[in-house]
Image 1 (cartoon, one colour):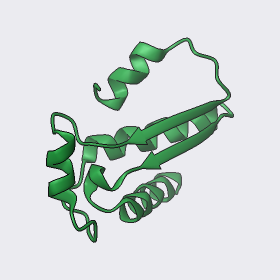
Image 2 (image 1 turned 30 degrees about the vertical axis):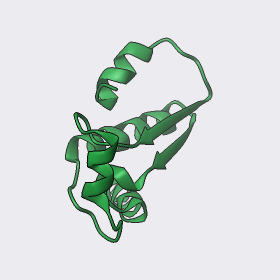
Image 3 (image 1 turned 120 degrees about the horizontal axis):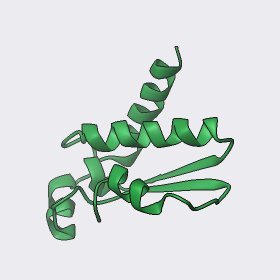
Image 4 (image 1 turned 90 degrees about the vertical axis):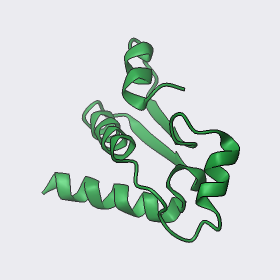
Length: 97
C-alpha cells in the first residue's frame, strides 16, 4: 500500500460518515520482516514519524468534518500497538493546545 497521504488523495470523493486507518506493516517492509523486527512486541522498535503525522492529521480532519475516526494499530507498525496509540493520543492533545 502507498503512504496514508497518497491513499487519501486516491480516495477523495467518498462520503462515509467515518474514517478508518489501519496502521500495519511499515512501508517497503515484508510482513515477516516487520514481525521479526517487532518481536517480542514490548517496546517501540522504530518510530514512523510520517505515519504518525498523517494519522493525526486525518483524525483531526475527521473531527472537523464531523466524522468518526477509527485507528487500528498493529504491533508490526512500530513494535508495540498500545505505545503507538499513546503517542498518537499525546500528539493529538499537544496539537489541541
